[in-house]
Length: 477
Ligand SMILES: Nc1ncnc2c1ncn2[C@@H]1O[C@H](COP(=O)(O)OP(=O)(O)OP(=O)(O)O)[C@@H](O)[C@H]1O
Ligand SMILES: [Mg+2]
Image (cartoon, rainbow, N blue to C red; front, side, top):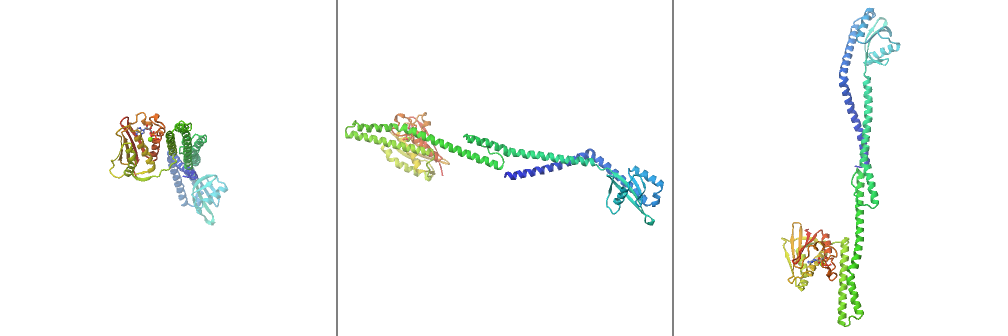
């Protein structure tokens, strides 16, 4: 969710939750209050109000059966005074706004006000006098000569103003407190979701700017902050990759320079020796000179092959050579290979056999030319390191559920256990004495890179004196 939207929603939520909590708290407060004082107090109050009201009603009803003059009788007034006192009330007898009798002191304004408010026209139950609330009953008398008499009974009502006052204070303070708490929560959430991740991001950015690309940036925080973390992490990975690639370029360049100077020095020195031999007249006869020149040419060709291998290896290492993958039938491909090598092997007196153990035709996705480079090196090695009168090389084609497995097995001299783990290393050759005589030691390193470029695997098993088994597995299409 977007941060602004989230911010807005969280604030609305804070207000709504505060209001809900306050309402709940008020309900609990009122319930608790009623439980402690309320129910009894209310019942008592209600009963009392009911008693007073019915008492006043009774007095008024009996008064209405009487003449107004009887109200002015002293004994009646005494009786009336006693009755209203027991009800905690007051009685007022008025004639034309003039107070004839009253159990409570009333000024002129109170008289006017009570007459006006208690009038039948007004729908009031209570009247306010001197800041106190009274319930009332009233009896009207229409006297001869247009005079008007009134009996007014007033009973004060005790309102629980304290309770409302406390309830108000409680409501306001609870709302303020809960709103503050909610705000605190919103701020905490935001600081956890934004400020903390942003400060960690800042630390990570400082590290990156200092060249430390090893620390990953965790995806954390809310909305855009999380996206920012992800983008920065991608940037870090890309940067790291490019730094790594740059490093690899540099290493490769150094490696090429050192290997060229080291491995090419021997053949170049010997070429120089043969040419100087001719120039110095060491080779006197034309046959000798021809022999010297041919040797020098062979050495030059070897140098050429080595440089080609070096360049190919270096390009493969830097993933600079694109592969052109084609769907290829395994059996057909190796039949062609065997045909190409038949003559060379016949010349070397080695038997080359293709054994197909696959049930049906299997297709693989390969760069035919590059794979040929791999097979060529393995077959060359098998021939080169044969040292067996009855040389025999078998190419066996097998399949698993997902891959095609190619085994090239020879009965040559084999490779010792110590050398076996290294033969795929660049420039590694088991017999250094033959160094630079034929081959650079790059053949299997190149083969490994090419097979890995096909997402395949190449491995070897070998026993000294028995022979070597080179295995290649390539994914089926
Ligand atoms: N079939 C094999 N039998 C015995 N030894 C082998 C065999 N294949 C490879 N080796 C050993 O592994 C080493 C590395 O082989 P690799 O093909 O990489 O180099 P190379 O053949 O010496 O040189 P290049 O292939 O560059 O001409 C070889 O020098 C050899 O000692
Ligand atoms: Mg080789």
